[in-house]
Length: 287
Ligand SMILES: NC(=O)c1ccc[n+]([C@@H]2O[C@H](COP(=O)([O-])OP(=O)(O)OC[C@H]3O[C@@H](n4cnc5c(N)ncnc54)[C@H](OP(=O)(O)O)[C@@H]3O)[C@@H](O)[C@H]2O)c1
Image 1 (cartoon, rainbow, N blue to C red):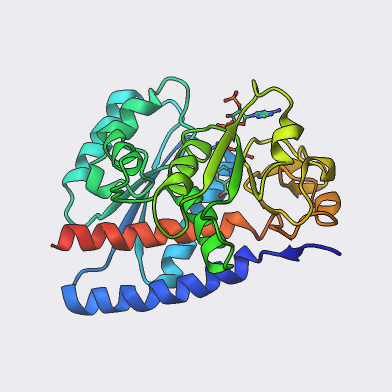
Image 2 (image 1 turned 135 degrees about the vertical axis):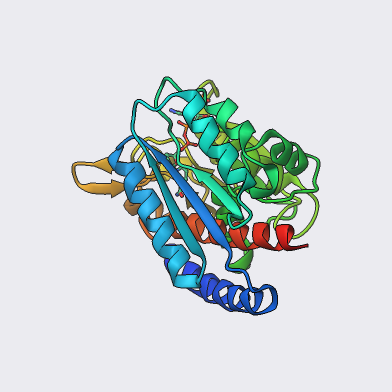
């Protein structure tokens, strides 16, 4: 029997309407509009699309967004100066620096320079540390989207073997911490796999919940999936046939219990969690 589709697009729409109501309440109570400053360095086409989508989503829920565009040859100091300015600006509640940055720029130094209270991507070491300690200020957007997808689809994580393929700072690592944390949407037994993992299919076949974030089109095939498992595909790969996930959707849907499509799975939830964090940042700064 074919797997149930986990419709991230519909879920994102529902969460965005909840956020829109909360934003309207916030504006009424604080006479301040939650505001996100997006910083885009260079003209990478994929980054431009991501930033445009994020700003459109802000608009839909009543969050104000600012665009700060810098040329591809911007220096580290110039970018740090812009961040210092945005850190001080009381009308800006969230700062998003679109990654990747050009190679002359030290990404980790830039992420560390963002005021942790405005760090809506949750990449600042202070926020990463808090997450690992189980007292998060903000949850990083993609892992939070994955967790919401599970929780709101009533897929139990407690006691389940969750295998995450990919150990990036943006997806795999923080997601492992979140799913292993105590509480709802957590309490899972987590295995993290990567490019040096031996016999990957033997491990992925043990997963009750399999999350794939590696950046290789259609890499996870039906033989790598336990019958009835939940498969969450984080991958976004541009191929000659259009966008593809890291999971061979057509094959895996014949084996899995639930599966996310690409597009329309995790992607829309990632953007939605950015809106959630921007409102949370505005609340933090209003108190
Ligand atoms: N849906 C969304 O909103 C969203 C958000 C973020 C990213 N993405 C997508 O998710 C994918 C992953 O992104 P990322 O930023 O996490 O990627 P990344 O930083 O490139 O990390 C990829 C990870 O996958 C592992 N890996 C690569 N090839 C592998 C293989 N053959 N077997 C096992 N593990 C392998 C790497 O292992 P090593 O550590 O050993 O190199 C690494 O840990 C990309 O397609 C990206 O576009 C989507």
